[in-house]
Amino acid sequence: MDASTKETIATLYSYAAQGDIESMVQLGKLLMSEDELDEAEKWLKQASRQTSAAFLPLGELSLKQNNLEDAMMWYRKAAEEGNQTAMINLGFLLKQKGEIKQAENWYLLAANQGNTEAMYNLGVLLVEKNELVSGRKWLQKAGKNGNSDAWIALGETYRQVHDYENAVKYYEQAKIAENPHAYAFLLEVYLATNNLSMAEKIAREGMENGDLDSLSNLGFILVAQERLEEAEQVLKKGAEQGHSNSAYNLASLYALLERMDEAMSLFAQLASYGHLNAQVSYGTLLYEQGEKDEGIRWLEEAAIKGNKEAMNLLAEIYEELGDHTKAEEWKVKSNLDEHLRF
Image 1 (tube, rainbow, N blue to C red):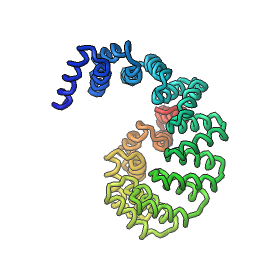
Image 2: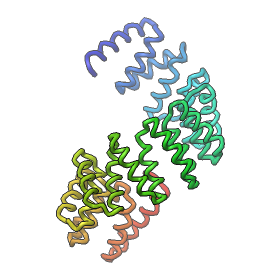
Image 3: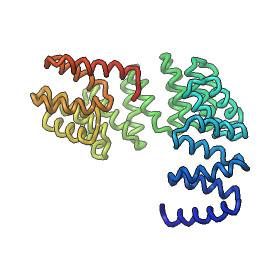
């Protein structure tokens, strides 16, 4: 805690001790930000007896304490007093509990009051319920009110039913709104429709706007077009800027060109930094080159972190080595990963 914060807390303590309600709330919020949760709770609860302004921070405090029931209670109190942030937070927690209709009601209440985040959340919830007309309506309202993620979500509702024309229309809206993810979604549509010229155009546009993922994707597209020298230069540019996916694609290109020393060196570096795909590629290549124990070690490191490809490879490897018990263990973990998110 820096000196300025200590001084502010001391001043707030002085006023709060004299019964100033606003100071109690501000003190509680500041103490909470410093993780002094018990003391924060004391002042916020004291303030809550006289002002509803303490309800929202008490909800946030309860979440920090992993007390979801209390969090919902305080958010509900704040929401009933008209606090839109509380309505959204309550809706989120209710949705997590599976109480979808109640969540929808709170989102709707805030959305009808013009809250853009609530419009977005309501739109997503309705789409998940397969109420596409209503969901799209709210997503469009959120997008027009400045939520660029709503344009992405709206585009996704069309991409998922292979209406690529409308998907592109709304991804373009997200791009105009400078949503950094718009390029990746546009690229996905053009790759899905095998329109490599438009995919390249979008990737170059993203790259010119400083999107490093677009730079990496451009390298991938150039490889697909067998423009390998150009791809290498593009991917080197990304790797030199510290972009791990560009470096990974560059290592993969080296492997494709059978420049194995360069490929292995770059895969090893990325693997040591925790890049999961690099760990899988490096482990696989080591295993194929006869360094089986080291290869398995890298594959297991990726698999433990949830990489499904590594799990499947380990199942195959242990089956090949005659260790049926370990092979079955990795098969089971891989199947579980299809249904659970860790």
